[in-house]
Amino acid sequence: MKALFIADAHLKNSHDANYQKLLMFLASLVHPSEVEKQLDLQPTIQQRIPVDDLYIGGDFFDFWFCRGREVYPEFVPVISALTAIRDRGIRVHFAEGNHDFFLADYFTRMLGMEVYPEWGTFMLDDCKVLFSHGDTVDRQNVQYLRLRKLLRSAFVYQLQRRLPLSLLWKIAGAGSAASKGTARIPEEKLAEILHAFSAAKLRREFDAVILGHCHQPIMKEYSIGSRKRYSITLGDWIRHFSYLYYEDGNFRLCFFEA
Picture (cartoon, rainbow, N blue to C red):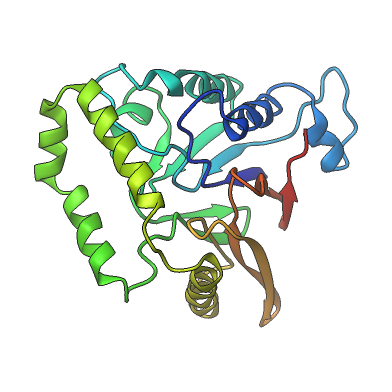
């Protein structure tokens, strides 16, 4: 079994460098490309980068609101890329992030892709994986947890269904820009919290815990009993252009170059 994991692209403008680079990467899942060289594959006419599943670990979009099939115009290119991946036979899965949620209305109902509102648990061969964006791991951040609960409430869901999409997109864009200017916990400290959480999960039940949110690409390997276990934070597609590749029991943290 072969799978790819990415997180934290924060897509907003299709002309942004990170957006264009991600489109190139996604195209590599359909056509032979530089990614094959990074994975030591031999590109041929028939061979493409071998992937069964693509897992997107939250904050793929910098904000998300849609109405039926009507989506924010800047997101059309990347949605087309994901649709091409799906049509290639690759299963696409989303974990909702703190910037993009209510995803199932479009990606599950319209495109048939799986969405995890918070936690996903699944098997990669005999490896039991816990997968999430990771924004609820820090239980000390009570203010954020309350805000998160409000934003995902039935009241807000129904409210956003009634407001004009153009207004929602303007509000979401302004809110996202404002949030980036506020003081937040440093990425390194957040990474420590996420990996401490993951280590506890590995000791009890899981073989791998894969999270986003902290924007730090880190993979820690443990030997517990007779098994290797992994605590992984995926990094981002803003500075690191990092992705996780799984193949037949092995994880590799990689960095896309194009």
